Length: 314
Image 1 (cartoon, helix red, strand yellow):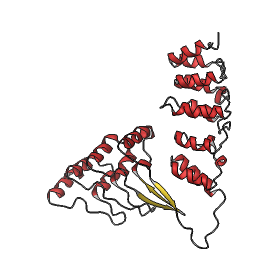
Image 2 (tube, rainbow, N blue to C red):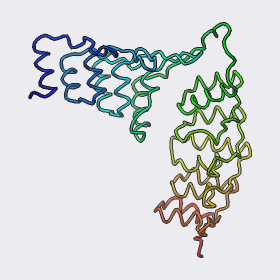
Image 3 (cartoon, rainbow, N blue to C red):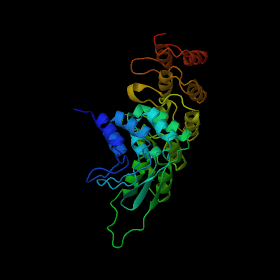
Image 4 (tube, rainbow, N blue to C red):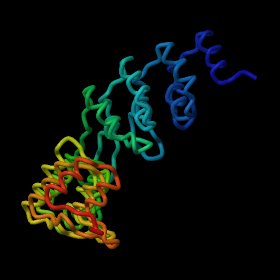
């Protein structure tokens, strides 16, 4: 029995239209079908035959229209395939249209979630470097005699937008009066980027709140590791607004314990310069220096010793 790839070659050589939609419900192109079914061999065959990379389809189940092959490729997290599609002319800023209640979203490949999640930042940087832009949204005119919105509608939309890093939507919802404290800095997802954090800070979100596992915003930020310096800027804003640099979190650890564990020398210096207790002890009596030494973070350990840091048992 011939494989799907072999059969595709036979059909292509026989002059079959490689862009003709297939299926009764979805009506998608062979390329989109191959991507959905993870048929990498067929994908490469179609690419070699010059398939239309911008042929879109509509999802009849959730109503999103204009989904292109690149939108689906981004979902896979395959950087090589993304670059291959872009090199062959895929529209990096193709927009889908997705109506949700009284909001219409226009999503580009940059707006799509990446699986597996650990590749998210690398995919995001790759797309932005090649000119990717975020999508947009517009509020639709409300229908006549519409039912009143349920309580907390704006806040639910704000939470969804913040989790998905929709900066413009977050800005508009805050402007429309969404209560940021219904979410707060402590309610933001670990995936929420620093731009979202900054919007919440500017809007006046409380800086000493605690999430469900007793982590303060500064504590959570200190544990994210080193980025491009934007985390230092945000931490400085939090501290300037009164964030407690010694606020203890899970296992009685402090932000400085977090930094010593993840190795961010600049963050450690910022905390120490603003009164962080160098020899604070967690529930096992371990200090930040114990953490730094245990993780072999020599520069942070050296900085802690310069400022009087000692191990818990000394």
